[in-house]
Image 1 (cartoon, rainbow, N blue to C red):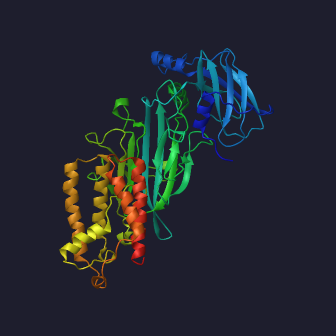
Image 2: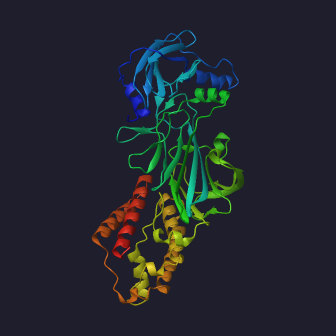
Length: 481
């Protein structure tokens, strides 16, 4: 059965749309409902240590709505003086539920919750909001190299914690298609998902329609829930892990739809990248990330490993909210194993390094002699191309100044042209360079359109990466594979 997007349920409920109730039978949900905004106000006055900050929603009608996978249904009850209620859900097999109540002219909603086998569930209800001013994110990304059956794999493990410090239920930003999302991370082409878990059983990140992102669309509960979860030792978070065939340079671009935790909250940096010590590194010239320290940790229950830890430098010009480029140089992977696809960059953005332009530079130097791109590889050329790609990516995200970008790129392009000049293929030198096929010209035209846009969004840079992969495959096909 197709999973119902929980965010859609909140919007539908807000305008009065209700699913028909199921017959009342044996299932039982018992809960205690509290006023989220009123409880939050008391926390801010009395502090987290108060024993009287929870404000019950007394004598109000509450409706419990089934969401997510399983049977749909809605059940109603009236709360007691202390906010207690119970509903019979019959044969509903839903894993997750939300509750709605009307109090003092307000429509209030809880976050999603799972039924308990026994005992009452404490729930806080809030008005919904798309204001992210008090919402913060903490993202930790671990990278390790594995060798399976003679092939190298990059294992990526992400831990994401989202905290809403407001007195509302944050439902995210509404998209053009009418859906909403709270947070997203890129999912590289060819990745194999191993785990995908949310803070509640049955909750996880969904894959976007284009397959390029993992998306959190579950509304974020407010400060009152945060206070209650801290008392119970249960902070809400998501975890994802996947593997992908390793390349010698793995680059991802992470959007920042929510402000990362940081010094303003008295917390460590909210965007941390862990790379396996001795096997990987991040060049600070190509990224706003700077090395903080080296730690031994075991991400997602794995065996402890030694990681170099990177974060956005305090003196970086990287603007808050801008995508963060993470280019990881993996030393454990032989260049020869990835040289055939050196112009493809997993899931990230890539500069428009057109073979015809570089070949043209070398041709002009050699006075008409044709150049074989494949014959000149040897790894050195691809290393230079990777550096040019990294610079173009940083320029698109505004992470380096135009002066620095132009100066460094000019030198690297000269180096690339020099590599082509020094390493021609003898067989190719007597064969005219082939014309660019029509399919490739169409790809080049679209890439040029994207490059001409004044601002590069995450979506356009992802599209650009896929176009360049297609361009590379097209050109290789014309050269006979």
